[in-house]
Length: 156
Image (cartoon, rainbow, N blue to C red; front, top):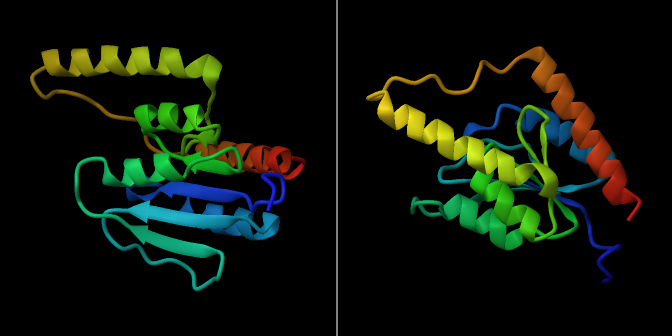
């Protein structure tokens, strides 16, 4: 099977993913495969194109599985910037759960910002915030961006 004929696969870094239900609906519309990757089992729909991948609880085991299976016919959904970088290098499209795309032009600054924030949090003796609450606007942006990426991949 040529690369263009290979099915599109959505690889979901599932442990903190707030948009799994949306992924299932969009994947059905595009006839895409879905892999829900985590360290512990999640309930998934009973569907032949949706599969659960439970990895061992080793550090970054889910990230490693996703990065090893990412390719130009896959869309990776993650909030993990370092995983996003690995998947971009494999040729995958990468989206955060709020719909923000990661690409070659943005990943460097995202990694730098991550490092700065990590340093700031370390200097605050455990005081920190974390990401803002997930909103309806985030969900809408995610759906629009996932649709855009899948249309693009579908065109080959």
